[in-house]
Each structure stands twice: as C-alpha cells, then as structure tokens.
Length: 147
Image (cartoon, rainbow, N blue to C red):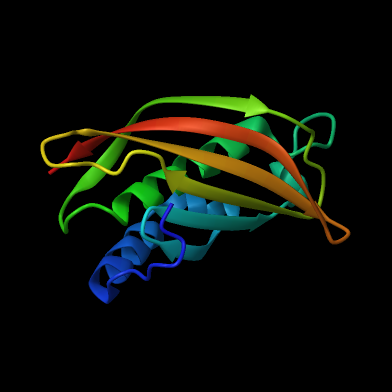
C-alpha cells in the first residue's frame, strides 16, 4: 500500500506504546518488527509451548498475531486517540508451521475516508526455517474504529 512512506513520530510512538500494553503478545514473545502507514510486521520465535499435539504452531496463535498485526496496521492510519476492535476475521491455513520463526505481515486494504468506521486488513503469516520462508496462513480482518 504505502510501503515507502514513513510514519509520523507521534503516530509511531502511539502505536508502539499500544503494542507494549498488550500482555498476551508479550507472553507469546511477539516482537513489533516494522511499521509504516497502513502496514505492520510482527515476528515470534516458535517455542515448544506454542505447538499443538502434532508439533505444529497452534492455529490460534497464528490467528492472534494476524489479528493484532492488522489492527496495528490500521492504527497507523487513524488519528490520535482512536482505537480499533475486531468485528470479524477469516483465517485460512495454507501449510503447517513447525519450528523456526513466524513472520506476520499485515496491511490495510481500505484506508478510511472521512465518516467511515470499518477498516479491512489482510495478513499473511510465514514460517521461516533453514533460511526459507513459507506462507502458512492468510487472514482477512475487519475492524470497527472507536473514538
């Protein structure tokens, strides 16, 4: 979307503080890797306690990070004091994620013109293992803007 643009320092501080306030992301070890207007990338090292019974990264964790990355991407485009809450998301699993690192990249699909309250974002999750990145899931997320 707006990959070459840089965030205003105040917006970036606000979004990073918002991220830092989310305890479950800290608990999972998620790192806010990159922010640009309408874009967010989060990363997490996959640990054994993140896996399900077959040794793959649990889908609920992928969904949580995809949802959060899209929400943070949306926040980069909103005025100070605004917030978002998820109203719907769809997650498709494309490949199993085992070991390595999870990278989730999200971008806003419809920047809000004046008066609109719903923002739609998409996220793609990649597992990185042995220097190779494989898409393991894709999400489409809708947010309601608050404030």
